[in-house]
Image 1 (cartoon, rainbow, N blue to C red):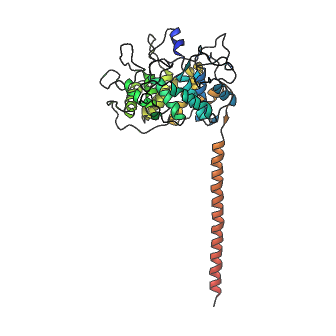
Image 2: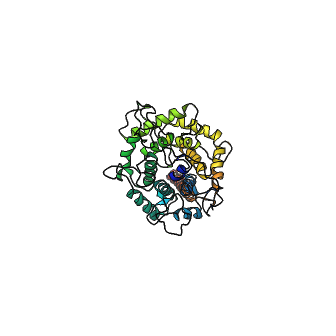
Image 3: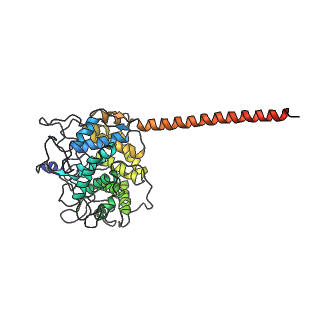
Length: 400
């Protein structure tokens, strides 16, 4: 669930990994690309416009902000008539056509964002209905409809369904739900990378461990989306045969905990690329580990990010800042002080300024005022009752 480009874009530059939604920095500004008003970030939005906007809005809501209307309107304006979203529509005033490739990841991300902002039930419902219509027979989803299912796409759709108030277990195709699909990508414990999840089987049908897919699949198996809090620690800390989604999650958590145990971070897994720290995957791993109740390795990875991830986020843009904020949220950390950097200010400066949502605060103040008023009434009544008691006692003493 990192900053993503489309599969077509990755193929064009020759770095298409097993995972279609692979890691990439926020694309550099293009001379021909114009960043629309309301969209966060300065990079070319062709491959990640909806994705980065959605992560931004979700992160702002976890911080207690009410996103700017212009930012929300930009996202809702990206939806096609059938309910789907593409990575980016340069001309949203024109109807979607066959040349525009809509995808499940952008659609699911938009659902999570718009469900979080509230007030967009119609947009969310249309998007969820479209996602249901492109579910594969194995219960999962692919990046582009019609392709084989993969762990990342299936998991981000699970998060969207949950955010929209739909039980993912109830969404079925040929009798199978997305929870039925996930165990098929879980690598058996007795194999190399046991406990991890593969993006999908390779051309030989083999499952290869993929850290990004493992973090995504863990959250999907728990029925979680982008936002998660620390959960209950698993009963067993070792890999067991994955026959249920809970076991899939626990096995994935054990794999991720071991992966970040030594260095505190995950390595890039793009084929042909030089091994280097993967900041985005590490941030996702923090959220996944926390959700699985493995807070110790999650905090170790978060501490590594605090020391090293600020330059990456500054270069990558809003989705990177959002990922770090969601990692902080999962552990109850303070994103306003990320080793001297305010992730909050850095994210909000990338686009139209949000407003602090004071509705919840006002509600709490009203309840506090009500409680104070109740105590005042109680105090008055208590004093009055004491006074009446003294009065009656005095009258009794004056009687012969």
